Structure formats: structure tokens, C-alpha cells
Length: 248
Ligand code: NAD
Image (cartoon, rainbow, N blue to C red; front, side):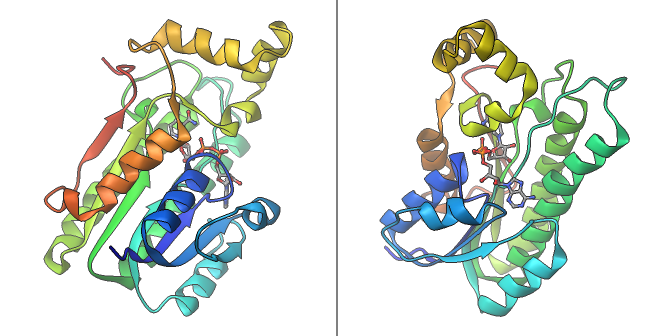
């Protein structure tokens, strides 16, 4: 089955790269990939030659380039994001704005292009997070940005419905991707375990995830693909929580 023209942001790594691989395997005709990591995009080995847009998702000029290249979009994964840590009291305004700039401004611009260019029957998935639902100390900016994304997806779902456009969000709990390595607290934990990253992830999952493990990027990509597919034809405006029970 053809999936038509597919857009993925944050495609150079983790969940986005897994989505790009899966969409290429399952019938994407055109694959538009966006990431600020040009080298990571270039290193992807995919079943379809992608059209790569290197840049910052919060830069409107990037979206002008994507809109000029894409007459229509059939599937979109609005996924680029950064993780920042800090309590409300500790978070600097700079960190707050940096988080909102990527996670909210960037997702808004990505979604705006996707809605403008969406062909009839298009399907869009936004990567939110379980931390947008369950408050956890030390995630002030990140959790707030992700809570906003779930609501943004619902508004877009309502606006797109009359054109047959579906918009959903996925809210993963812990997923084993390089995003964790960007957090100082995580690097400190790994250093305290003699560099054993897997042991730290396993310990974290056993501490806060009833199923006792984090997801893989491939597992989350498969769930995103389900939401993008015609099998989910009656599902719109939902947030699929995929967190091993973290929010229970
Ligand atoms: P990742 O770090 O492996 O991938 C994120 C990608 O986004 C990277 O390739 C990065 O270069 C890109 N990116 C970041 N800022 C960008 C910007 N301003 N412009 C363009 N590209 C940018 O992380 P991941 O875990 O695959 O994260 C994907 C999404 O999943 C994020 O939105 C993240 O918040 C969300 N998420 C991750 C987890 C987890 O535990 N890994 C849990 C819940 C939600």
C-alpha cells in the first residue's frame, strides 16, 4: 500500500529515525526528513531516498522551504524535541524559552505546514510525552511543553476532520534513545555505574514503570505507524499513552 508523501521531523535519531525507516519500508513514495543534525540525516540508510531538510524546526524559513518542496502531504510525524531538566525554582528563563522554542514553536510550525499541505485523508501524529500527564519534580519546562502538544493535536484534529484529516498524539513513557544522554543527571548516573548505560535505564524503569522496562524506538515507531495507517481510520484527536503503566 502506498503511504504517499511522508514528513518526519527529528528524523536523524531515536524515534524519528525509526519512523523514517518504517515508513520507507511500508510504502512511502516521498520521504521528507527534517532535523538540525544534517550528518545524522545523511547517515540514514533507508529503502527510499529521502529529501532532507537540515535546520531548526523553530525556524519559519525552514518551513517555507518544505512547503515549496511539498505539493501535498499524506502522513506526518511531528516528533523533533529536546529534553530539559530543572525544577520550577531552578529553571532559567533561557532554558524555559529554549524548551518551548523547540518543543512547542517547532511543533506548531511543523503542524501548520502539515495542515496546510495535508491531502484529503491525511494522517498526522505528534510526539507528546507521558510527562505531559503525570507531574514529576524537575521537569518543569519539558512537561509543560509536552502537555501543550497533546492539546494542540486535539485542536488540529477538530479543525481537520471535515477534510478527512486525522491528527493524533502519542505519549511515550521512557524510550531508550539518545535523548537521555543529553541530560546531565542521566550522564552522572551512568558515570556512577561505571558507564553501564543499560543498567541505569533498567533501574530507572524498574523504579517508575510497572511493566519494568522502557520501550524501544522501533516499538514506538510501530505504534505511530498504526495511528498513521488506515487501520486507525476512525481514530482522531486521541493521545495514545504508551508508557508501560508509568502514568497509572
Ligand atoms: P533523540 O534525541 O534520539 O531524537 C530527537 C531528534 O530531534 C534528534 O535527531 C535531534 O537532532 C532532533 N532535534 C532536536 N531539536 C531540534 C530542532 N530544534 N530542530 C530540528 N531537529 C531537532 O530523542 P527521541 O527520544 O527520539 O525524541 C523524539 C521525541 O520523542 C521528542 O519529542 C521527545 O521529547 C519525545 N519523547 C521521548 C521519550 C524518551 O524517553 N526517549 C519519551 C517521551 C517523549
